[in-house]
Length: 488
Ligand SMILES: *Cc1c(COP(=O)(O)O)cnc(C)c1O
Image 1 (tube, protein in one colour):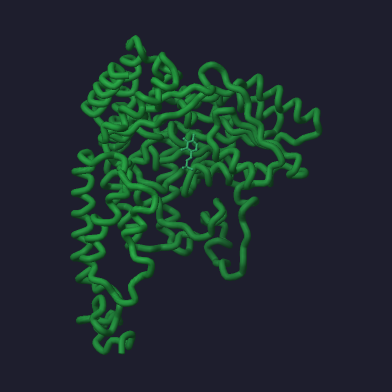
Image 2: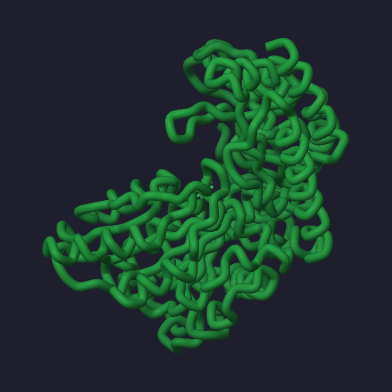
């Protein structure tokens, strides 16, 4: 019979000897096999990262093609792990989009790095549930430390540290952080939620509208932008006053530092002043551009953070830390905890009741949480602040250089300023020529750029920020753009 208690056991209480996969008395992978396959998998990932630049960035599969290679039912009995790994190459790889390619210029980066990958591995190995301080003190305290370090590294107000009245927490995504901020703002405000209004610019990320909808706001207002696609604060003021006059309740406003469309920067201070005078919760969405603030010369873009209640940025975009890792800060943690804390009897414990610890389950919607601080800690230590600055500055210099080449080209024009690592441009002959340009670049296989639309006109987004993208890759991209333009 399988599943009997193994007869041999050493004094660790664990079964020893031949109890490996399918060996007869246990279905678990043996520690020896785990070690062997673990080394093999790390080698596989190292080879993947070394060769990813030689693969076509986009997969060439049709919908359903990957699924058709897989059986309808899982196996009843154990399969050799070698067979599983072989299918990784045979079945999975043909359907992978290579976000880690140095030719990745699409969307925003979702970059990664070896220290981050190793942090994820250790986190999986420890398998802790960090919902309360007491369910793994190191998970909570390491998260305080990396969040507090980043306050200094990004030039955020020092009151936002966990040692002060505020604090930072790692959430899964900026969408979750923004949703949380809107829930806290709603709870903090008084009145009928149906009459509550949340504001953001016309260029705000879709997560703000979604967060407002999920949080139950009766209204979401999209405020007009200027010719640089930044929110016009006087238009916000007009909208807030019109809503008040109509008997509605203005509750929250979201400023973007780096919009998704073109990395436009809303005037944080001017919006903060309007928020203060009308008692609105002011949240900043710096999901992508927050990473740039590690370089002090970029911090003027977020001036006015003293008038901000909450802030989010994603190390999982541009800070060499793989998804999921979104930092969410609050200037004052009390309204957050008041909004989200529920204490069932089975979670009561001495440490929490002492008031000397933070229980992160009260800082977001989920109860359970992964040990995400570990990968960020590995990254911050393995690169050092200077290492991150070096690469982020290099990406931004490459973007500036590409922008000046585009600006000087007779057939191309920039559609927006280039404050960070995103270059937005189009063909002067219009939408068809612009689409042909994006399609021509993407047909090369080794590079990927995103076609997009702003003000009803098509444009091309080139986002420079993948971990291993260097000057040589951007030079090659420029050559490709030039030859494609000549052909169109
Ligand atoms: C990417 C992005 C988001 C969404 O980030 P997720 O972590 O995927 O939820 C939100 N806002 C801006 C400005 C972004 O660029």
